[in-house]
Length: 271
Ligand code: SF4
Ligand code: SF4
Image 1 (tube, rainbow, N blue to C red):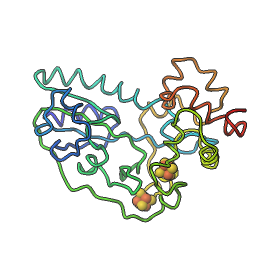
Image 2 (cartoon, rainbow, N blue to C red; image 1 turned 30 degrees about the vertical axis):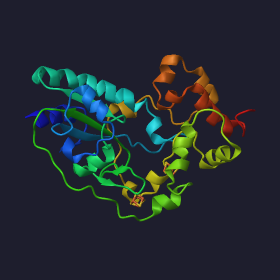
Image 3 (tube, rainbow, N blue to C red; image 1 turned 45 degrees about the horizontal axis):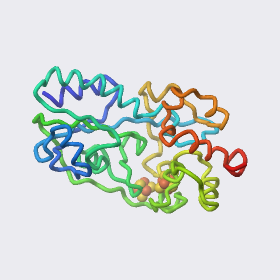
């Protein structure tokens, strides 16, 4: 009953890939988030789902695909704002906690164990319809309902992501992380970012994956509108605070994305 209710609400939002898992079968990374919500990690359950954002074909895109639309955290915040009141109304004596990203569990492991996809060598969840171009959301609760578990499956290790990645999947050197680093970049870091061609994030390993061939485009309205695929310094400087803070690259402040963009516009962010 509970799972069906949540599924119905998510389906109404265009979310197709939904499952449920017991927290006992999850890797708990931040137990304090469950404690804060009043959910026992030994008894609680989670509805776990994926939200696709893939939309190709934008010319001159110079940022990662996930950052082209408005910040996906806003999407989840709106989604949870619709779902949570209904759950509280139907289950007034139960606890709920809704997450995307900053989650108490290892989301990729949980989504795979719940049957939503396989785990790529690049540590991302790979789904059948949208490959790794999905965000993972979860609704945790102390409500009892049937859950699913199968040992998480890994990809076939074809090596294409490794070959396409400028840092050979060394997470300590990931360009996506480098583009989000605050402060001054070293000469080497500047050159790495310039050669990557991206001012924010990196999609190379995802695009190279054979599971990304012929995938579907997102139909979720939030990711279809308000898209800015190509950033310039002038564009960022011209955004008011509200517009800027609605973007995924805003969390590191205006100076970080401006520093990166100037590398492409002037060859050096100090110029
Ligand atoms: S995001 Fe880019 S740099 Fe990071 S692991 Fe993937 S291909 Fe490598
Ligand atoms: S490119 Fe190959 S090794 Fe990398 S995640 Fe995809 S299937 Fe796995």
